[in-house]
Image (cartoon, rainbow, N blue to C red; front, side, top):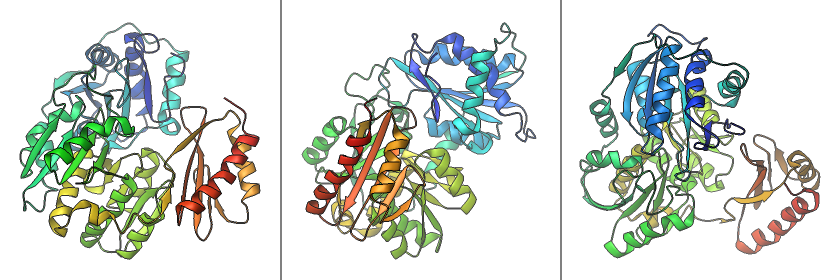
Length: 452
């Protein structure tokens, strides 16, 4: 069980690290995390699972744990993670558990958690306590007391997503790569978007026979890029395994950074909600902030991670937020992330603008960027302190790791929440300056950092 409790979820190799005994204990102790919640709607947890071969057994064990703890289980069966979030809010449940390992390879599985209204549970807000309970206490033998109900959520969810579709013309051609993951379930929604669908790897298969369901890896996007170009598509979209993330490809086959998608979608959203706050993470391009300002919005930088993004959006009443990793959040979706809603909003944008995606992105793609660069470092805090000393003449903040801004370049170095890694993101006015400053920043990391 070592190391399966992460910053935002539980995840590990089955059965070596995570098994049914753990799943039962997690189900039994999860209600303790909800004890301070408003239980006016009843003591019930929405349970669902992805298509991995190990998911049915883990879900069944978790169900027994929840029922033994006296909680009702509302089982929505096979579902995407965004469907679980929606069901928690729509049905008025006390919380939700999705059995999934998201984009991880087939041998992994895990659990994602939320409270009422789909409020996320992170290490700070419950996963840490859950880990302590599971490690230190043994749950009683299974003795289900809470009731079990199979709940049908699809018609309500389908109607909910389609409410975001505001423009149906012109008809567009769209390649969609679901990587044999849970976005396969979205085919009935896709059929109602007035698109010519070019489907890639539809059909649930938890062995991921075609490629990993991780659209952040460039090699996993090559099939989508090829299909877009060969089929003459207007747009390509790749979903991850549990369908909470989306990465976009323009009509030329070029990947569009999620921070630039945030910038693009902010404009029409701000037309509907003038002057609103739009939340983006610390890794995002300067162009994201500038686009939000140009559209009359209030740009708000936040730490990386869905629990931080959602909390800030709730606090501000923000209608929209986006992260570089491909998570996009919507106030009208219980502040939760949804890849399918992001596809719908992108279609709205293309139809409203009447121009190819590459031309919409081009004015925003004005800075040279490194992308995310990883360093295996054991002494993360020492390295961050050294960077603060070396580059302290710039504008420094510690919102997430360290960010230093100068007039024509900036960088962020932040510790991974789950691995002994420091992650560097850097941006500059041109490639020459980027290369020069990258050498300086990396020199500090290598000189001070000890290999993990």
